[in-house]
Each structure stands twice: as C-alpha cells, then as structure tokens.
Amino acid sequence: MASLTQLHSIEQLEEFVKQPGKRLLFKHSTICPISSAAHDELTAFLAEHEIPAAVVWVREDRPVSNHIAERFGIQHESPQIFLLEDGSVKWHTSHWKITKQAIAEAVQA
Image (cartoon, rainbow, N blue to C red; front, top):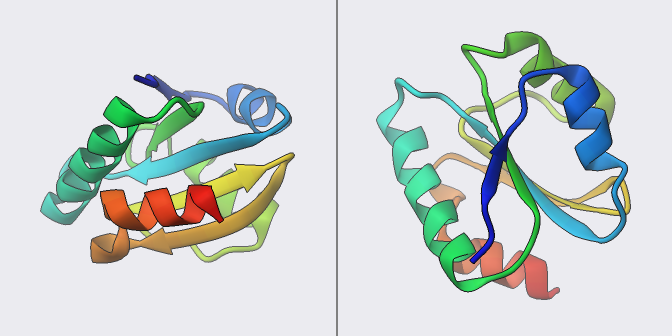
C-alpha cells in the first residue's frame, strides 16, 4: 500500500517531481464533494498499488497549486491528477474522470 504525502511548499513539490520513475500528483479541494470522491478513488488505487503519490490541498497551499499549472503548462482544475514519469506529465485528468480504473490504466500504459 502506497502512502499519500502532502506537499506544502514549491520546494517539496520540486523534490517530488524530480524523482525518477512514475508517481502520482493529486490536486485536492477539501471543500468539494467531487474532489472528495476523487480522493477516495485515488486512496482505493493506492491501497492496492505501490507507487509514490503526493497531494496538494489547493485552498490551503495555493502557491504550490498555482506552480503546478505554471510548471507543466496545464490549466488548473480541482480535483486534478497527474501521472508523472521522470519529471514530465504523461497523463492527467480531472473531476469525475478520476477513478481507480482510470488511474490503473494510466499507470499500466
């Protein structure tokens, strides 16, 4: 079972991103029911798979959330998930499309 590390600073984000291999990055709104459902889907996926994963709470750590959009050139959405591989975005999606199955398919690709 993989754990979900919360990132609070741009430095922590950059350290997470620069690590080799595949990893998941999730942007989460703690007040949004859609985001809560997506978080549950990600947690269910991580319960069965060993992959590094991190979460940014978009309201509480807005500078980090904004940096993700700027760094990768992908418009901010919440909830939003990224599959990173060797520092680059290989796949991303948002809202109701964040499912355990969708994450599994992206990681396997």
